[in-house]
Length: 412
Ligand SMILES: O=C([S-])c1cc(C(=O)S)c[n+]([C@@H]2O[C@H](COP(=O)(O)O)[C@@H](O)[C@H]2O)c1
Ligand code: NI
Image (cartoon, rainbow, N blue to C red):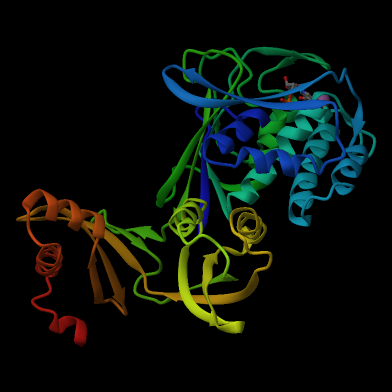
């Protein structure tokens, strides 16, 4: 399962959330294309790489001439619902704004339909919130985790006037969330940031066991004594990390089941040199697998079936990539159920050097040990030994180190 962990050591705001997701690999062009589906004009979205206390991050700016606004929840709901964004994005974005309105209504002793937003209803806040929802969707995040939240202290000035930090709406939204405040006199968490993280996250605490695939840093505006950054770490959730510290993917010995999509295209008129580039591009974009098959089509035309195994939420991303990167003008897609053995990546020391092996177990007995190709290739080149011999030596040493006397264990 694909998860994101937000490390809120310098708080969280709407623009920091969006910046972190962009920094973690959210496609910038795709984000702008998606945001253009909102009936909002008169703004420009900009990103810049910045350094905060030596750490590189992305600062997102929403440039707009919009003055002070008073939008009600129904106005924001209308803007979002009249967009052509996917329903899942609309629903989540409206959920965030509804939480904001509920907090506002409670603080100002009024009702959700009477409350009007100031800054949080402005165009930049709408772009920050909807952009962050789009980003979590595009990056395929299925669960969100976060650290305790650093709130900052002191006072801040806003349309309401001078406000204590954390602002009343912010603290209302953070009810039940572990927070802390050190002596940084700045508003580190804004209502927008609090609304986003508390809409998505029910698990505030340490980083869960996960395989790290991407990391991103979203920058805040001020320069502080700490790096004014929000870190997001994206990767595969691990059910648990064994007491020996070894990481296991999937349940203990049970077959893992998952849903996915198989996307295919028959291609008979494309320069075959492109396939190497496309396979790497699609894998980098998050496809679980990409492969080719040779077929004979009508009129006896030799052709290739390009197949991508993708997550269900990646449907639009990948058919858009196939239409833009290949000569295909059509794809077929069918749902698949995946059954996978749980496995772990173990690093072992061998007489040739260090190597990783993928160890799969089924019903708690060893079912397969596969040395990692890149490590075997490196050792073969370093030691000038045939790759096949390196592979066999690593495999045998792995079995011994895994306390299995021989391959007989596998056949049991
Ligand atoms: O816009 C509104 S309604 C608003 C309410 C409150 C309350 O605490 S009540 C506070 N603020 C302040 O505005 C700025 C901008 O917040 P963003 O979430 O848009 O970044 C911030 O200082 C809030 O404390 C706004
Ligand atoms: Ni308010």
